[in-house]
Image (cartoon, helix red, strand yellow):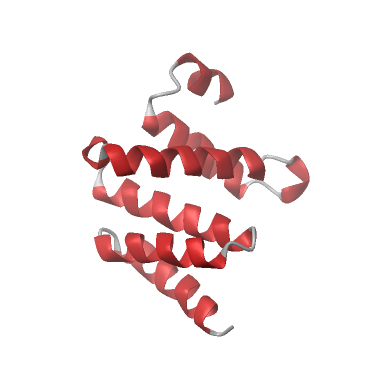
Length: 108
């Protein structure tokens, strides 16, 4: 996946797949920082050109990026990002995951 992203760093779908795969790897593999960086790039791309990705993919980016922010202790950014994903209401499973993450944030 790294080669695919390097060959076309502007291709959001390839970067998204790499980010999700890296994010879901066990922590000892040391790929979470790569995933977080990819999600940051994807968020910036969404701000400038959201129509390049389906609403479901956009919502997934907001979900994973929001979770990543929370993991880094950036709870305010995490909540704001999750709320953007929640507003899309593109996919019921993602809606439920976002709702659960937001509920965790309000407990503190």
